Length: 326
Image 1 (cartoon, rainbow, N blue to C red):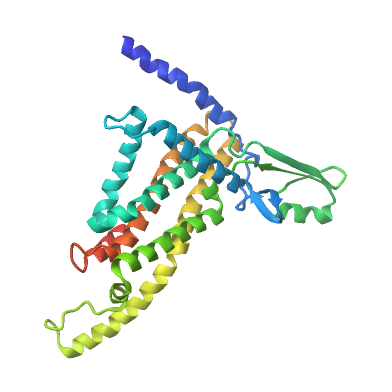
Image 2: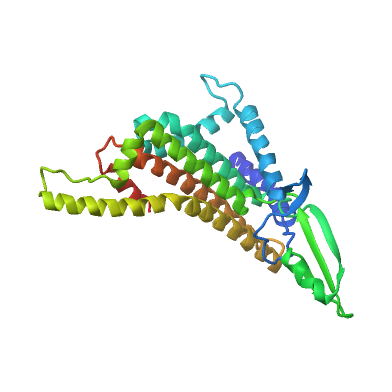
């Protein structure tokens, strides 16, 4: 009986948080579409500071502080906080280790666990009470001739009886940074440059060129004519591969941005229909999507690195992993 009461007590403790989630997270866009661009809050020396940048800085500091407070000084017998963090790190490591190979786990894992942790928390930041709610209100009355200019700047316009329009917008302080394409492009660029560094540092330029353009056939197993034909084919395939490598910047950034931005719009629409209770299941859906997208981004970066740097299982080992990832 005591254990059952404790379980129900935990649910009762969670009820106020659930209520806060459905009330304080009422979207600033009034149930309409979320702006695809971040709002500029102010500028420093002509450099714009947006709400997604503020969110990024806040959670970056929060990650460092929470990790230090929860984990503390590592101990042989871990505390509860240290055990939670170690379990997360060990879980991610067990997934990426077979992909990276024994040689690449140690140098590449800090990048991968950093990407996973940062993207996960940024994805979940949109679900916190107050996200997209508090900010600076801008409103006023404008003539019909000028209303389109304000609509282009994400103002909501309402026609008045006198023929003028009442325009209003809330530049909220906190916007999930991964719902800003600039942030996801930056993450993709960091991952791409890190991939280039690891490939050149641990595989070498010669291995990179051979992996892209080299003939994978053995001269002893095919005729000279067939070997020449295969060389031309592999050269063409290498050119396609170079294009696909360049487009990783686009695929990584737009996949993450599209899912997070789509989730923002979904929650906004649900709050526009019914402000209470109904949006709750969609919050749980976004928790799952945020986790999956952080995992997918991290896993793809690991695959890209392992394709060339991990040849422990043979020459075609990396190619098989790429096909499995896609």
